[in-house]
Image (tube, rainbow, N blue to C red; front, side, top):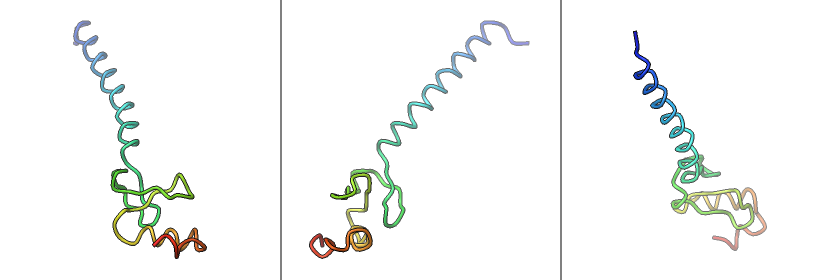
Length: 81
């Protein structure tokens, strides 16, 4: 049988872990984003934000920027390469 002191300790530990889990999700979510062209999840510092679609990110390296602009912004795609 578990003593009252041990039960209180277990509850406190559970509350700390649950609070940390809720906070850490938001911290990780602020650091990561998915590329709209290839779908890879990367750190935001390795992605660029679209000038015209402010909630869209794409990879800095590679052809993801060109793919996004060609499919979503074809009238300006030529000027952004």
